[in-house]
Length: 238
Image 1 (cartoon, rainbow, N blue to C red):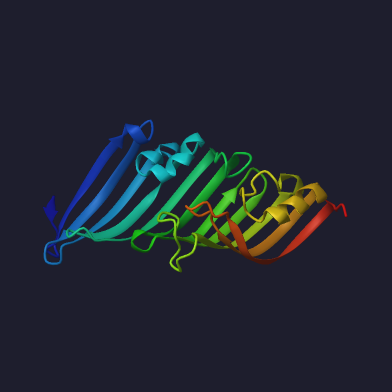
Image 2: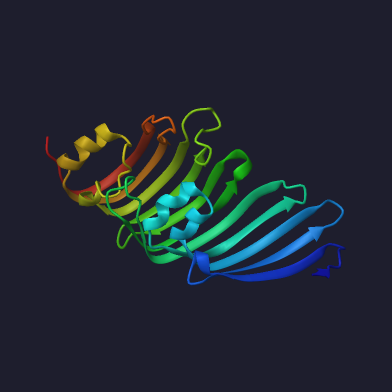
């Protein structure tokens, strides 16, 4: 720890975290303002095994079947009184497999994934500035907010709410059922999957509002869906 020219105190930390990878490695630059009690943290990590995050929060235990290794950066400000500000993040991975049994039918191949955004634990809000996915052919781009996923209730008191703007390209119709979230828009799924078995979604843009399943057993609910799509070679059964 050393005194900076502006009278704040600063230091650099590093650690190997074998329980979170083989091992996960983390470094952080920390600065403390003695006058205000504010602490700023700029951290970097690599080799973080997504499946290990259940050690931090039991609600993340469903990630245990995934094979995804993350690297990235985190930045936040906290106070010595225990107040934690929003956490800005940038994360990437390659050649992984996201497996969520009970949520989606098949594991999602992540040839490349990059995301940046902000986590506001005080308001239980995850803001996704941009998430890009390469699924080994199809590509997906996502931006939006997830409200209330940790507490089980959105800021309006309802079930956790996901609002997303989606873009996708080169998505085979035959893949439609693979990654459709369980319990979401089941009537739509029940018609689309058997009736559009072949063809290619060349491009799609959509705005989606989805209520996640509630802690009381309330099912997931698609609140709104609007967008546009360009296709080729679709086989449609009526």
